[in-house]
Length: 412
Image (cartoon, rainbow, N blue to C red; front, side, top):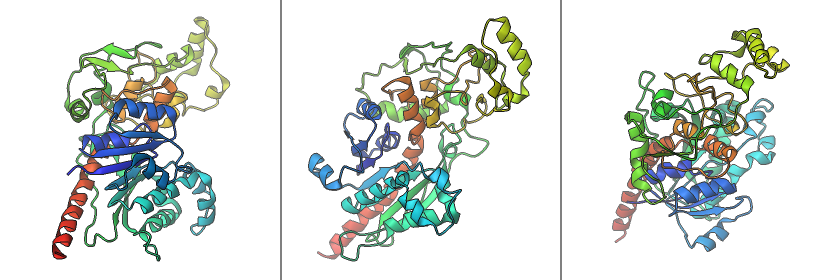
């Protein structure tokens, strides 16, 4: 059974990618960012990609435009930037300010679409801090928005379960955590969803070396959008690419090439710090006087005062033998917190390296400027994590399918 999904707030399509690899039909995807939509159109040509603001696009308009009236599943990750600051200011009962912050209201648009289309299930992703914020009261408030049936019978509510998943436990070489809400429609009685069980532990996690160790070295602003490269297969790269290569055979991807392996410009001062810094070492642990002397001797700018005054969290070199820290959207501004572990290259991560650490396959080709691409990658749900969630959701959808058959037979 190939289930039909609608992806809301879809970004560049990380969730969609995982669900497509798992055999779903992601029929429609809605995203406000133009370049992220271009990336989706490049990689998901069979999906209807709509660039639009979900606070303005009503579900009725979408149905009229697409001529699709029902979905088995709605997925998505509404941005909720206000979550990060509100938790430090509100008491456990202060839902008013939470709901009034427009940055937090986007999840209400997700609720609106769920109520309108009444899919069998939904999956909503968000930042992990949401799970425990205000001792769990905010999470419970969100779950309640989905759970109740409409007194006038216009929509049915959902039995909602939520948890935090660690991407690294599902094959992603990155210590990323996200909270997921899953709902099963109330009228499917006795059918519950079980989150997938992790299949990796601390001794088995994939590392930065597993993910990017085979990629060719780059210098300063080195690399082209398409470079010849023979992949040296390992278990991670095999898992990363096998489903995607079967999924995307006609997107002008040429096997044997690596796309988007581009490094950004880093100034001479930063490159010298990159060379000397050890993985996870703090800047204050380096001999800054020695670095300053080197820079002066080579005609480069002196170390700025902010670095001498202890602002050393800007710089972080990755460790070959550990998973990466969370790849974040800030990567589009600078790469100082994502320094390549090879000091000889003295640079921050390339676009393709960041994509691999997020578990995007090599034939997923990003569109836009470097800044756009880094932002798309940092905002995405890792496709490999999405893939395992999709498989778990299918088990519940199959149970619902059987439930519907049995219910139909009972009335014949």
